[in-house]
Length: 78
Image 1 (cartoon, helix red, strand yellow):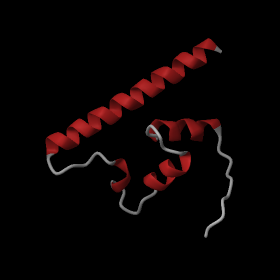
Image 2 (cartoon, one colour):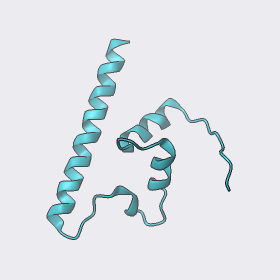
Image 3 (cartoon, rainbow, N blue to C red):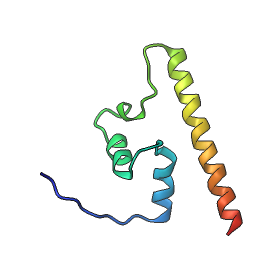
Image 4 (cartoon, rainbow, N blue to C red):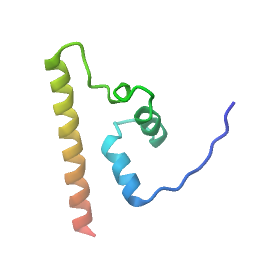
């Protein structure tokens, strides 16, 4: 069994991870998904057909833009 290790990251690094974080995912899940040997395996948007892949990419782009807008709105409140 592997033990847990804590790591510190800057706010910028955390913000970047947040862009890729899916609902219900831990930061560990994000890191493991993004560091798969197969570069595209972790993104979960590539499909059998080009239209399905495009739909997945569009959805990911919309989620990232919404998170960035939300984060910008929260920073404006501070």
